[in-house]
Image (cartoon, rainbow, N blue to C red):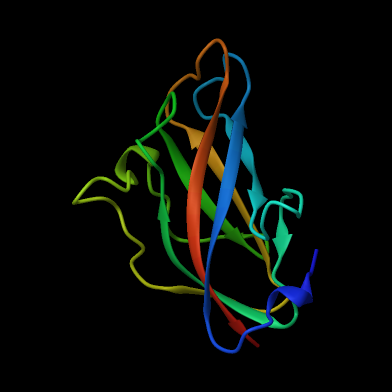
Length: 144
């Protein structure tokens, strides 16, 4: 889903993609939940994976949650072009309010036409009622 009209300005633009993970009722420990990504604003539907527009280069600069895990701790996996990246932070370490929260070891470039996806793997059994977890990804978007 490429939307080339979004790069109207010159230079890098900050963008926050919200990834929503829905955990099934009574999900088992180790269950993998795929996130749906809202990266292009409220008028463009959520999807997974998203395709970086051919006019853009994105750089992943930060990831966080607000308030910690919504129900049970899980590891977040970032996937670029179908390849899992080499960082798997637990949700409990990504709270934006922690002074010692987990941070990316380096900026991660995501080139034009790459796919971006994200999953979580539960570290304990999920709640009987299920739930939704949000993770925020901060990108800088620039022209390719």
